[in-house]
Image (tube, rainbow, N blue to C red):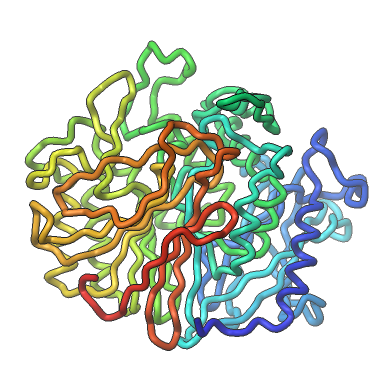
Length: 528
């Protein structure tokens, strides 16, 4: 790959990783003495950057008390002649989180930054700075693009296990030095308590780091916030966040398993005292917006939405979908008309417009749910379906109608270089969709790649629905359900676009980074 050299970056990364791993934790969770400066704000949850462009980026931090956020940037790790950015006042209204937008940055360059938290009453009193680094998007095609994707973190009660070194998969991902990480949803499991221990099949015990907010399902805003803080207790994740920008979307477990707008939780589910899923979703959405640097969800943002397009230079546009907020109710999904579908009409029309106007060589559709894999909704034993496919291999029905409309649009507008990335199903696979195998044939061939989980139970491969003619070219999944991360089956994917040829290579990788499957796609084609 013709990825640009990064002189000096390895040394600063070693320093960043060491500093991130030693970050202070909240009181009672092991504060490091070197950072315990009495009366000064602390940033024990690390730093993050999000939705980085060719000249801008968002920097995130959380303080342990009211503080003014200050960001300094420089071209080198020595921070000579830094540029200073005055950020927001962090307070209880945002759970002491905040983001600062950096703008006017040089394209295709390594940016070094440090976040200082100042006492609002005495700006001279600042806590220990927390450092990070990221690359801005290059406008030069020859520089290429490399990014990773996965999803599903801390599910099924498998949380941060100190015996295994925590979320080790983030260390393997960091070693690949990606330009950014696409988190494909289920960033938390708000409906999944984390017990102190869980029994492992065949003997043995899994131990978890635990917190008060993870002792039950999340219902209150405080409990949702606590779910996001929980993952940031992991040193691997904090170190990763300090060096790799994220592009984040949400799915169901940020709120509740298989949720949809208007849902009312059954009285038989005694875990919940709040039965309105719309109320829970509003609280979860607020916490989600506080704990990730998303420009479309920042306080005062006009859009107020998760779906968006990230332009990553001449080679790549990433279309981030929201397959939760605008969907219809889960059902047998066999209706012959379905104007709302899984995206809603407004989002679908937005996606069509943005795909048509894109001039990037590759258009990645970042979906939080798969297209041709059957995902049932077994809640309360109903024969309903959760994703797009419903197991009927015939003509499109239900939510498939909306996807058929989109695929037809891509074909007739001759939009080249589309591929779908997703997570959700807790295994990894590659599906090729081909009209000659399909019932619905008015589309061009395309690929769908699945990866995950990051740290959750692994599950057998989902069955395929033949409506769009998928062929499973590769799959790795356990035979049993809910295999713990100690048993393997934790995955992430890599997309590597060569700046010279424009070829795009997808690699499906295991937790340690080893490659399971690789496929190279050629640029400039409507179908592959």
